[in-house]
Every structure is written in C-alpha cells, then in structure tokens.
Length: 357
Image (cartoon, rainbow, N blue to C red; front, side):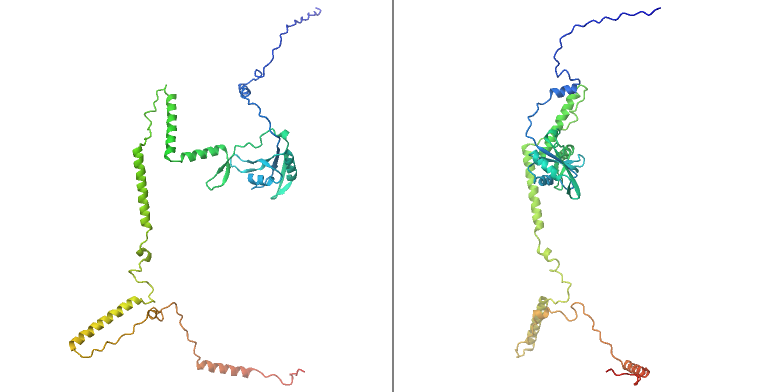
C-alpha cells in the first residue's frame, strides 16, 4: 500500500485573559520566608561613612586596650573588636578598627601593612564603605571579672550560668523568699497542666513559714544578744594578765645561775643581823655585864659587787695549754747532728776559686 499522508492538526487559538498584577507577598513560597517578609523592619537611615581597617597577625598581648591606644595616633578611633574564641575567650590574632573618616583609615592601613611588631609582620587592609556589608563589630562575648579581679571574656551562655550560680548561692532571707515564690508558681502551672489526669501536687507541697513581726523582733534581739556576748568574750580574751606576761618568773628562779640575786642576799643579811642582836641582848641580860658597846657592824656589799659574774662561770673558757718544755736530751741530740754534718761537709779547693774583679 502506498503511504498515506495524515492531515495536520489544526491550531486552536486560546482566548487571552488579562494578566493580574502579582503581589510580592504571593511570590513567597515557604512559610518561614513569609514570616520574615511580614516582620521585615524598615531600613534605618544610613549614617555617615566610616573607615574600617582589618589588622592581622597581631602579637600576643596586643588586646583591645592596646589597639585603641596604638591606633589613636592616626585619628579618632570609634570602635575596636578583637576576634576571640567563643569557648576559651582567647585572642585569634586579628582585629577590626573603625575610624571616624575613611581617609584616616586608608592612611592607617597603608602605614601598618607589613609592619614589624614584636617579631611578627602585621598585615593591615582597608575596607571601603561600599564593601562594609557585614557588621564587623558584633560579638556575643561579654566582659566578666573573675575571682582574682582580672577581666576576662566569656560567651553569653557562660556568663548566664555564672550569674545563675551566684544567684542560687545567695542565701539572704529576701533571696530565699523570692526563690520559694517562683518555685511555687511553677508548681501551680504544673498543677493546671496535669489537672485532667487527676494529679494533685497540693499534698506534696510544704509552704514556707511566714515570720510575724513579734518573731522577727525576738530573732533580732537574740542576734543582738549573741553579738554582745561574743564581744564580751573577745574582750575578756584580749585582756592579758600580769602572770601571763611574766610567765613563771614570779614563782620560779631563772635557769641562769651565773648571777646572784641581790634581794635574797639582803634579806638573809638582815635576818642574820637581827638574830645576832637578839642573841647578844639575851647574853647581856643573863650575865648583867656593864659593857654596853654596840656590836661590830658588818660591811654591806654593794649591788654591783653582788651582781658580778662569779669567776670561772661565764661563757666557754679555753684551757691554757702550756708550751712544751725543752728537754736537755733534745738539745744534746741537736748538737751531735750539727757536728756530724760539719764533719761530712768537704771544704772548697782554694786554688780554683776565682776572684771577681
């Protein structure tokens, strides 16, 4: 059979409908983008143009304060941000410096590029206002003072945890009351949430005891009494006694026996004199003698003589070693040795000796 040509399909022209204007909101595909479009804030009016310099290869110890102080020589520095680690807070070695005028920033970048600083070659580049699309000075690090009084940089999470720990460790009455009230509010919310399940938290709660005015006054008076009692005890402890200061020197003698106590000697002499006077008076009354001459007075020794050190008791005395006595035998032997040496020595020949002119 010969081939048969099929007729071509006729084109049917569609009636053109007028196009509707497309809204920008309808072009949004996802719901997240739709939310972002609806919540888009109006753009803030742009301020004056600023100059930003990025500085790399910074040496260790060149931090925010040092950067601000160093770059102040070029012009007015508005903002400084040193890149730091979010985990440790240590420097990453590069920073951003913002100047008031872009011309000043350009000059600072040109001068500081390839600059040798503390054995490191610093690299500095100028970022013009057209390319400043990103906020270079936004950071989540916060400055915190540690226990040693040193300023360190930590993340927002670390600072929040430190703040909460400090808050929980505060055991003042007002702080404890605030914590208990907040915990009770949380439990009330849980009670409302699980009310349908029949769970009751009221039996498990122990409400805090509210102090009345009388109890508060009694507690304050007790605290004041305790404080006064402590003060009295400390005052009694602080007052030293004479016995504590002098130690055992009042009742006991000192260990140093080199000195003689003058007061004891004087009392002994006075007692001896009184005894001798009484004995003489008794003898005179018994014998009824006429001789009334006074008894011979003893010479009282002075204090300086009594306090003198006894001989042979002061310090460490070296024994005097007598020089060795020369015996007659040693002298005789020396003489014999000299005679033997003279006999052995030969005299020089007389003819050979030449006279020096």
